[in-house]
Image (cartoon, rainbow, N blue to C red):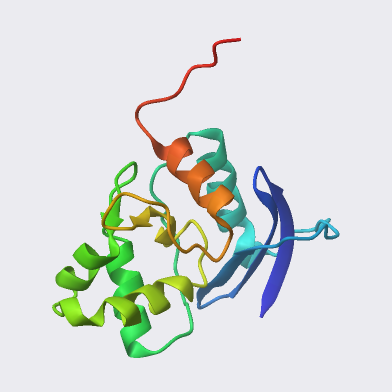
Amino acid sequence: MESCMINTPLGFTKIVGDENGIESVTVLNSNETLSDIIPDVLEDCVYQLNEYFKGERNKFDLNLNPQGTEFQKRVWDELLEIPFGKTLSYLDLSKKLGDVKAIRAVANANGKNPLWIIVPCHRVIGSDGSLTGYAGGLHRKQWLLEHESPYKQQSLF
């Protein structure tokens, strides 16, 4: 398993993967030592993340290999269907998975998503439109949703 550490606008990010695909992309709440050398198997992921943050990419094209239960993988696959710049409620996500009563399990699986940004769990919000639950912190969720919004807020100053 290979890993590297990069810096993003939202903090230091650790990428882990091998020839079978990217296993995890995690934002950290601490300063880390950046990688001098990016392993070959992670180069495309680093490149695509950099494009995303520059506003040049709205869909990732990577071989993914997240580790989780079959249910978690079903939830993560469904997250990949949420279009760039759009959101979906936890309730709607539960309905898409075929069981509105599974909303807590769906929210739990969403929170265990190991592929930050690439599997867009940040696009899932509360039924009332509120920003709820985000492992990376609500400030990052808000930043990501604003970054993806087709309606950019202009600065008055």
